[in-house]
Length: 239
Image 1: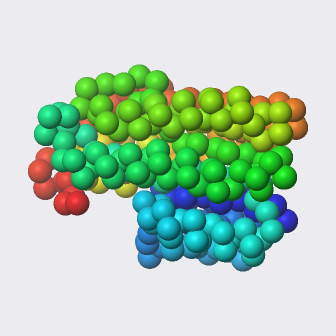
Image 2: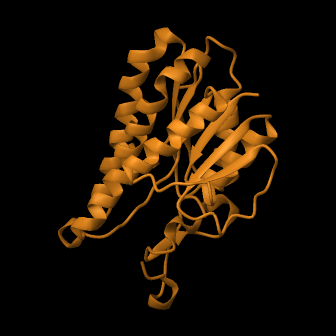
C-alpha cells in the first residue's frame, strides 16, 4: 500500500485531502498540532501530533514514519497560517510564524523525504495560494511566503524531474475554512463566491491520477466570482 503524508490534516483543506487520498487507497499519515477537532477515523488514516514549526519534532516524527512505512509516495505540504493588515502594523512574531509554517517547514520536510520520494517516483504537492500569483495590499508577508513556496516548487521540479519525482503546486483562492477565523473578513457564502476544501482535494486527486510521464505542475482553483465579506468585531476570534 502506498503511503501519503499530509500536513495540517486536522481540518479544512488538509482534512479533505487526507480523506480523498484514503478513498483512493493510500495509507495516510496526517500531521497536526491538535487532532481534537477532527472527526475523521479510518483504518488507513493515522493522525500524528506534530507542530511543523518545531523542526526537531518535525524531523523526528518523519524519521519514525519512514522507518515504520519503509517509504513514501505522496507528500502534501498543506499546513499554513495567514495574518492580514497593513505591514507597518504586523507583529514580528506573526511574520515569523507565517515564514516558518508556510515556507520553511515545507522545504525542510521535502528535504527529509526526498530520497524516499525518488525511490517511489512519487509526488511533492505544495498547497500555495492565489496570493502567490496576484499579491494584494494587507497581505504582503503572507503573499510573500506563498510566492516563495511557488518558486521553491518550480526550482525543485527542475532539480528532480529526471529522477521521476513529480512536483505540483496548487493555488486555491478563498476557501471556506477556519483559516479566516482570526481575520476581519471571509469569503462570501454564495456557492459561486468561494471554493471548498473538497475542490482542492479534487485537484490533488487529478494531479496524482495522471499517467506516469505526465505532470500537472500547477493548478489554480478559483470561485466564479469574488466576494469578500467584512466581519463585525464580535465575529473575529482572538488568537
